[in-house]
Image 1 (cartoon, rainbow, N blue to C red):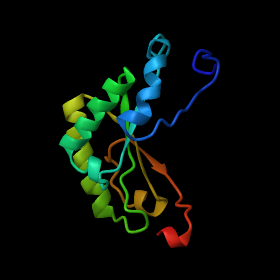
Image 2 (image 1 turned 180 degrees about the horizontal axis):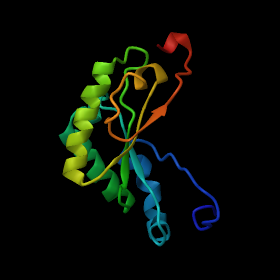
Image 3 (image 1 turned 90 degrees about the vertical axis):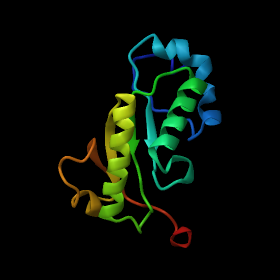
Length: 139
């Protein structure tokens, strides 16, 4: 289907763990036959990715499970509406250690516009504004 056809842009969300991404293994040869991007989305405020060593372990596990190379990271570190500029700067520092270890890159740093506007211009990756759309009772 769409993986074999390269005439359009395709975005796939394969979950955030090695089991979710395992489905890509069957298509790894087909995907890697042409240029592709595979980004790992990281939230340093989740237990499984809260420090560089855990992020690197997940990075390696995702690559092993999928048979594909992760080409970049999206720093989506947040605590929903409780996220502060200090939190985002802490996440940026953690991601700096990860990219140094992997020789990778942060493609985007995402967050609500009010916070992104307060971050320094040398933050890793392009600033990617997001709006939080959740039911209030979930927050």
